[in-house]
Image (spheres, one colour):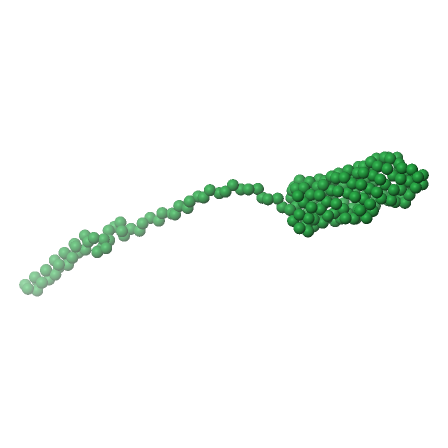
Length: 210
């Protein structure tokens, strides 16, 4: 009976320890169900930051604005043009300006004032084609008759060229082309013989942007 009593007491003691372990406080024994269940993962909420207003892309050096240029080659034959250019966008540019012609060819010397009118179309970067018109009024002196002949004229110059930027403001623009007369009134003698038309025109412009 002594051994049976010892076994019974041991079983009772183990049962008592089981009861105490099931009701123990969290951290001292078995943890409660809530602690054993992993917490639901709450996705982090990223704050939505207000985006600053989008500003227009600034114009490139070749996209818009005014510029003024003058020829470095035409003055060799006493032709003095000034180009006032208005760049409308990356492709289109219009230009105008005054010009004076005081050249001599054969028996004829010109004294003519012109207004330049033109359009320039850009194909790729600085590569462009252009058409330039020179309406004007003036006098042509003839050594044949020793007289001055007043009249109107219209000269045209289609060209192809490229604009190279020396600095952000200054540029060099070679634009060779062909020049030819459309009409002239009150022509002096030997006008057709002494005036070359059409003629190669080696244009080279130095300009500045504003």
